[in-house]
Image 1: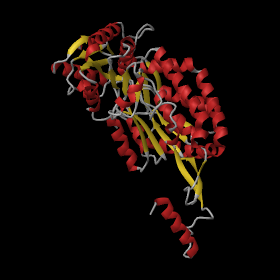
Image 2: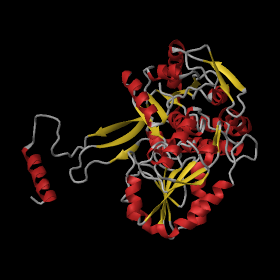
Image 3: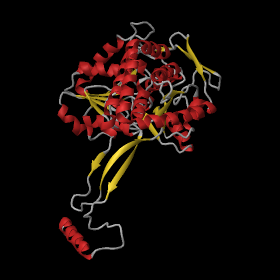
Length: 493
């Protein structure tokens, strides 16, 4: 499996091994050691999950809600320990880790309280004039769901799927990234403490071989969040077992700054969206397109804020190291490509890349063909380009291969829908840059995060006065005449 799916680095053995060791990327110190599980252990884990799922599904919405809220309280009480563990395995500052945990707990609370409203059986009336079948629609559990965790936000990103799957009545087998196995084990341990005999949530640790084995385990659904390359590899493995797959493909997006925007707020959001977590967020800002008349003051504000940031391992650091070592070279190649093509360095340079840390880099006048624009953003690098019109901004945003989230900064909020209609993006934010999670597909507090892990079931009942679909070969002439008359009236024949 590709590194972008379940990354393998020098800090964890690339081959199969009995023990998986996690390290603090800031110091290289050992954080913990965990089993590297094989196909046999995966089979036993999935078998026990199927047994637990039967109990869990039979509980119903109210009982599952109580269990999930109890689990939420356990997570909240353990926030300090979890924050410390996230910080140790990813190197991110404790404040960033605390934000991640807070949002994950809030999302768990939301799905627990909204599962019945979203998935419970509702009435669907038949056709108004025909008065045909009436019925109800409900959503049932799928069974056992596998979740492949991410390394950049090892709690929040997988919790989007874990919480939704559990609230929908499924059991979950969670494979955390091999860089953050301790975080995954901690989450599973808190559940096991509540329900030691019901493994509704289990964790399997290991490298890319373990992830591949999970994909082949004939699960009822598989959830993956990560890069496009990883998604393609997971899809290939899931297809071998005919397992349905839900993918949350990450990628920092674009920002559009219009002439009437609050420039200080837009600059702060752009810098945070590009630099938070050393630019390793699954969402955020990669490129900013700024109206020509406000370009110079905006760029000056961005540069001023970026120069204040400092990466490091201490509590006062703005952000931590690059978690995945191979991504440092990606950043170096993208910055070099931009410079070679004529981009101008505003903040930082190639010398800003000092492994495992990268100081803030701001580029402008970057050609749209540069990999700094077209490639996947993986470090604390921000591209700021001027545009003559908002039509040009829309064209540049739409030029990327796959639609990205777009942040629009303007005081005229009512004008945003008209501008957004020209964009290919599915998610538009106004005067805010999405970083840790917003309402929307694959994000927190979205009903689809529940329905993704449930199967719809419709129950219909034939209306006694249905004139057409009698369900027999006996067609009453009078009923057919009435049905024909109603048809002509309705459709003006």
